Every structure is written in C-alpha cells, then in structure tokens.
Length: 170
Picture 1 (cartoon, rainbow, N blue to C red):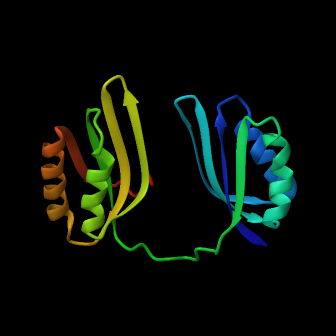
Picture 2 (picture 1 turned 45 degrees about the vertical axis):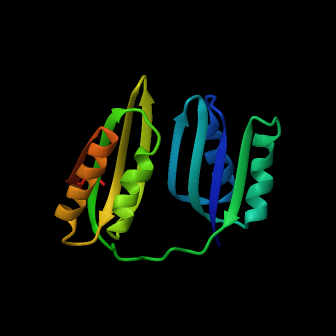
C-alpha cells in the first residue's frame, strides 16, 4: 500500500469530486485527508489517500484530464504517522481593505513565534479581504502573539482576532 498526495486543478464544473472519488474507489484507494474548493471559477483539490501505486492512480486519472481542462498530479509521500500535537489550537481572522502583503505579514508573526498554520483560507469580496486560519501556537505564547498580530494589523490597516479553537469542532 502506498500513501499518495494527489492534486486536481482546473476550470470548475459539476462532477469533478464525484469523478475523482469514483476513480479512487475503483482502485481501492482509501481517501484519508482532503480539501477541495472553488477559487474564482477554478476548482482545486488536494488529497491524501492510501492504496495502489502512484503510476496506477496516474493512469486511472488520465482520462479525466484528457481534454486539457483538468490537471491531476500524483506523488508518493512518506506516511506521517501519529504525531502528537505540537501546540495549542487557535483561529486567526483578519479582515480589511484588500492590499498586498496581508497573508505574508500575519503568517510571519506566527512563524517567528514558533507557530504553525494548519489551515488557511482567503476570500476577496469586492474590496474586502478576509483571512481565516487555523494555527497551532507554542504553549504560553498567546498574549505575545496576539500583541504582535495587533501591531502588524495596525500597520496594514486591517482588523485581526485570535481566539482559542473549539477543539470539539475541529
């Protein structure tokens, strides 16, 4: 059994998720982690599955990409194993007028504090830019990180909040 990282990107259309999931199911691949979204009319999916060899999955997905509308990539990856959480979970939210550097500045604060972004989503609606991220922070760093985020947000002219994640929902 191989552990595989698979990406599928292209112009959105109904049925992409079903098509990919059916191919994987027919091959006996167990989909363990995935994220799928639509980005301004484009579909993007990344998933991890356990199953057949990468070459077999590539061959089975090839017909879905034959018309050039989708690009599917398959890569064998090393199993992650059962790693213990390395930090405390928080939710970061940033909102304000769209400008370059918002994600870079906020994630740099987290990284410099030893934090890790575990999920991040951005959305531009008109001139409003919104970032929502799940992050792990080293124990005892919340106050310092929240303060540094507030300073970075003030420099960018955006609002920011950092709150403990409700682990029952994650």
